[in-house]
Image 1 (tube, rainbow, N blue to C red):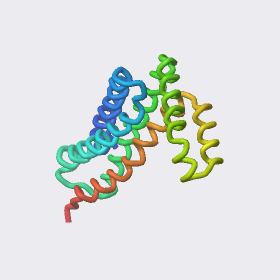
Image 2: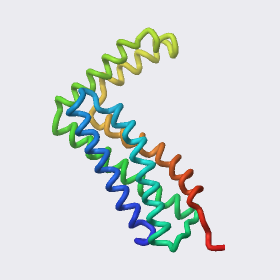
Image 3: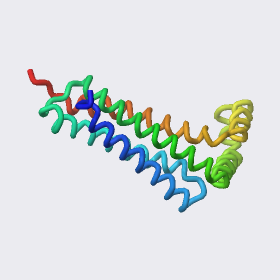
Image 4: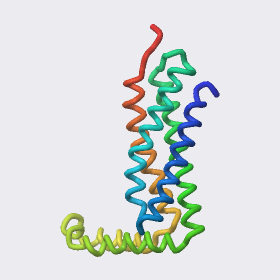
Length: 170
């Protein structure tokens, strides 16, 4: 089993750490680092999956990769990225509650600035429900959101990269 997961552990951990570094750096540069950190996640997640599958295929599996093996290695990679990133962001926001309050205020401000557009698109009730949920938001919500947005594209990219790298011995 370790043969299948050694590259996933390495590149998943690396991707998660890079995501945390990105969040920390972006928090230092601007008040709300969440949106840009998600964009960075869209870059680091497929790169980490690509490298994990490539290293597994070339160095652990004699140049072969089945779709199932690719999906397994990719799954562990993007789940590690998501877990490390979400836990790290949650810890950062718990340790620095002022940062959480700035992020929350930024999200409330964006809602207020886009109020008319949102109401015309989804209605007053949806706007009010969303605004209430943002006002009741906790630091764990931001961390879970970041983790989910590492998992969703991770699954997509794992499927694509596994198909591209697929090579069976027959």
